[in-house]
Each structure stands twice: as C-alpha cells, then as structure tokens.
Length: 240
Image (cartoon, rainbow, N blue to C red; front, side, top):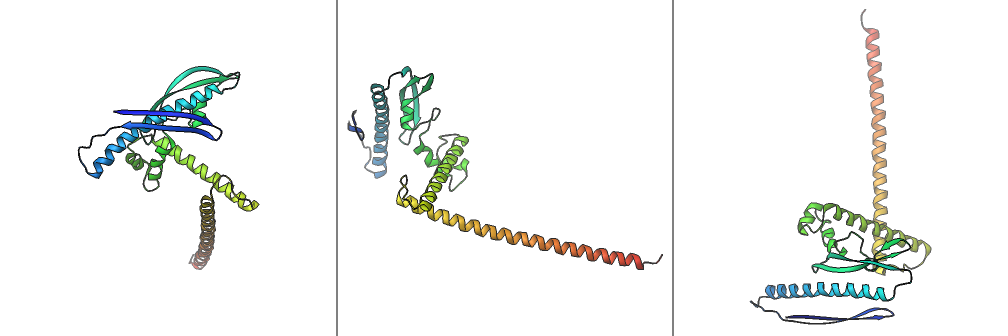
C-alpha cells in the first residue's frame, strides 16, 4: 500500500513543497543488504512520483502567471532518466511572437532533446576519469551513447574554463567572486598555479629539446663538411 500526497505553495523566495507519504514493506530477511535494497526500491519509486507531480505543479504555476500574448499550443509527453529511475511527465508547449518555447523545460534547465538528467550522466562522467569512455559506459549500464558522454565531458570542461576565467578576473580586479564559493575559488586558483608551473616547465623542456636539435644540426653540418673535405682531398690526391 502506497500513498503520496504533495502540496505546493508558491512563496516569494521560491516554491514550498509539503510531502506526506505512507507505505508498507515486507522484509523477508533481517539482513542489512536486504533492508537497504527494499528501502531503496520504495524510496526511488516515491521520488519518481514526486518529481512528476513537482514538474506538473511548476507547469501549472507558470500557466497561471503567464504573460499576455502567450498561446498554449499543445501538451507534450516526455520521459527523463534520473538517479531515482525514469520519470514520465507532460509539459505545455507555448508560442509567442511566432516562436515556440517550453517554459517547464527552461525552468528545469533541460534541453529540448535531453533524455538523461545531468546528475545521472555525471556518475558515468566521473567514472571516465579513471578508465576509458567505453568502460565507463559499461559501469553505468549503457545509460547513454558514447557521443552523449563525450558531449557531457566537453560541457563540464567549458563550465570549468569559465569558472577559472571568472576567478582569475576577480583576483586581478581585487574583488570577491560572487558566483562560486571560497573553496571553489581556492581550488581553481591552485589548479591555475599548477597549470602555469607545468606550462613553464614544458616550455623549458621544449627549449632544451630545440637547442639539442640545433646542436645536432650543427654537428651534422660540420660532419658533412669534414667528410666533403676528406673526399675532396682524396679525389685531388688520387692517381689519374
């Protein structure tokens, strides 16, 4: 027996969600692993239902507070894989000034063709730090395609580069970063210092290699010149 009741109240600071649920589970064993497995299954199912109701509530709130001139086109069915499981929901597609847009997806930060939540693909992305992309997909039970994982890695890299550039800018301007925490600021700065030292070290090693190449070229040219002189002398002293 499962019962889930959600009450949503819009406040000035955000959306207040009151959750009440009642459920029963049958434990066929008192082993901790069995208890955790049963609880995980029930809580994941509840979380998927809660997310569905939450998405619909956000869409309804937008509908009540929409601006004039916005026309509702049609409801669209959608599914999204999360760490709790797959969530099935629907949203309203709107049209304004001849352009279509999806208010719910924009509020949630979900792309038009995105079918996997960022937190779920993040688990696979972190696995790719220690192994290959293909093995990381196996660890994640092939929740996405290889191109999707690669795109997620590139997206995370761009976000990090932006955070790094913002941090360096704030540091040079003598201001405190507003978008990131102090711990993030320290990590980015330490990473930037390490990268600069490594870059200088790499440039010094490259300079040494270039000097070695120049020296080897000089030695080769001197050797060839010596051989030419020897051969020329031998040809001059050779009997006719």
